[in-house]
Length: 362
Image (cartoon, rainbow, N blue to C red; front, top):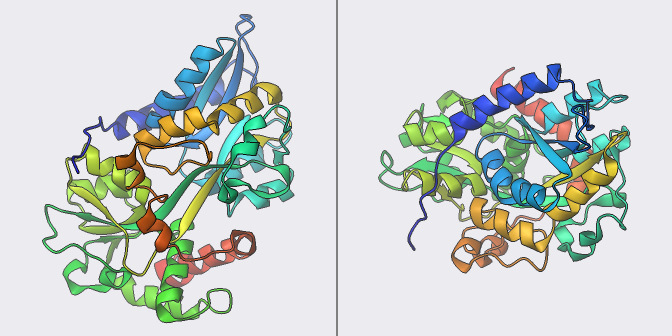
């Protein structure tokens, strides 16, 4: 199947991220929405992931929405991960710095409980009725926006024989050539996959999986690749890594096949990012209008076709060649390791802390 060339814009995304963060700190625009220029155009501030995600989401979702709604401007504030979002929202709870925030579905319930997010009004977000079951998150709060899965990444210019199993991470060929950014949801998902391989119920005991990762630690070159794991694999800084399938597929195209994502033979873990209305947002109605568009069939198809995320809207149909490379593919669905994310929410922080303390050594 031919790969579709795309422009790689990580550096530009990071630069724009720095500029946007700076502008948010010093802008005359009120935090979390408002219009300081007197034009009457309302600004909705959106916290989303940096790099290729920002580039694709802006092109396929934000710009079409703004074209159709000239009275609303979406200001994109790039963030690294859900932990950063949680910290920023906690620090600005009474006067929030954003109106909408992306957050991993295993972290979002914590924000819900702390009153950082607000329930959505179904009358303003009618596309909630069109969501697939996996994207229907709890208690009226933000739904899923993207569906993805954990994968192995490798540099095809440097690795002659592709890894096919999670166990291949321990292959002596890759010792000292591994990037393992696992102090977040990637590590939590990997613990689940390793527990499954070891024949252990992850809800009962993750000690064997932690010990397995400790055995890998001496062979890891970096736990925090910069600017990200995909760029490190593409440049040849490392040979093999763990990362998310969607970005891996995107980089496979933009690197002319140098970066290759692999679905391990034992299976993988599906991951959901939710799109959330920030509590106390002064632009709540406009924000919900954007959330409704972001989960619509139109937006989900456009974004999924460009960025390889499986759609959360049941009426969105990706191009067939794209769908086969997402977590919605038959191969991916056949190899999904079952996870109760509601249960995992209560263990997420403790698991990440154990990875940092017992595996990485922070």
